[in-house]
Image 1 (cartoon, one colour):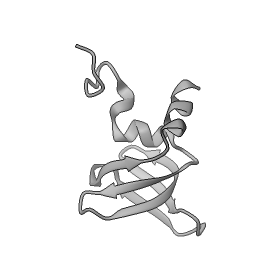
Image 2: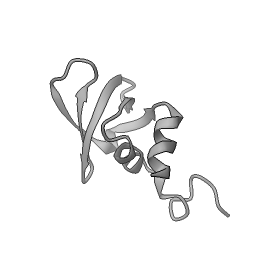
Image 3: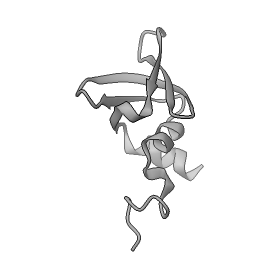
Image 4: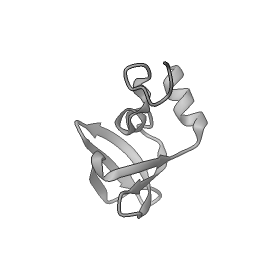
Length: 84
């Protein structure tokens, strides 16, 4: 069965892969403690998201991807990156 939660079928379903596709874009990450932050994705190194707080140009944050439960963004950004 092929569905979006079958990681062997659809590798973009992981938060890590979605964040990699959003490199250079702003998005909202929701941490497992419920706190939401608007960030600009700089890069993803292993399981660490390197980002900056959107709009201020600093500071750089390092977030363990396992602490993120949601990524909220415009679907056109993800689809555009996926289709490149």
